[in-house]
Image (tube, rainbow, N blue to C red; front, side, top):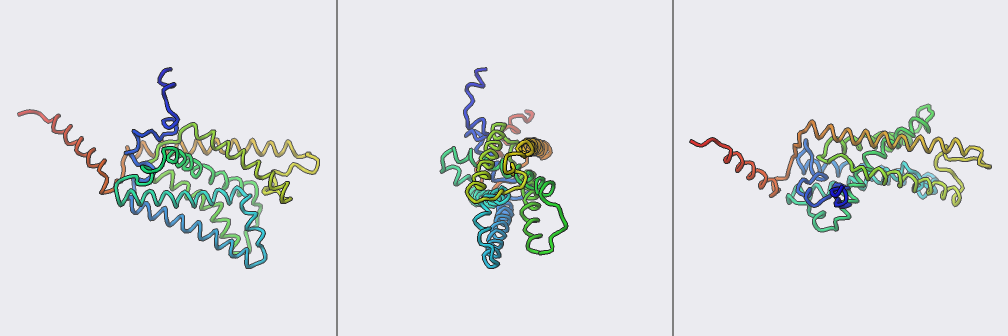
Length: 282
């Protein structure tokens, strides 16, 4: 019981200082750090390019209002989140590849490392929610006759989950702290507030299943959808946690470290010392 009381918030969020040398958010078990940084940067570049291209299309085809309205959609918000996570993750990984250290994490307050970990949890769970809700509830077919619309929906409601899978399978991250589940649910509650704030200020529902009707006659149906979404995020949190746990087991702690990582050299020296100490005497 005393051990539980002595646990710090940083320990519960898996960002205890004793774990800093692992560089779990900057390394991969499969790709060298620089290659991993390039991959993450390329994904970020594609996401932001697609966003601004779509906005450009809206602006030149009489749909300028949709640019501002896009910030009320969970799809767009999670897509922005993916883009920014990949951008910052690529910077962190590139810094580690070139120096062997967590350059920015070492200088910034510990709280930002914790927030980065929570950010990682969101981008490995929310994209699956977006994909399931769109293709399972909102999309009714037939396939889009406009190429741009089809490409946009593949990018935002298909490739988003592919990027999430990459961030589950490629890095050396540990399973999500259980505390982050509460954060995921809290963010969803904030989004519901944003959706109804949008309705009362802009006059439209971002998603049809949130429409309670003129006299609230669909309230029970809306509540059912909300609980269904809660169940979906629980399922994908468990899926993401288990997938990361399995990856850790299968890779046996393998890490592609930077050539400049002094911690790696120290670890290798420790192994050598142990091997010498265990060698039989003649």
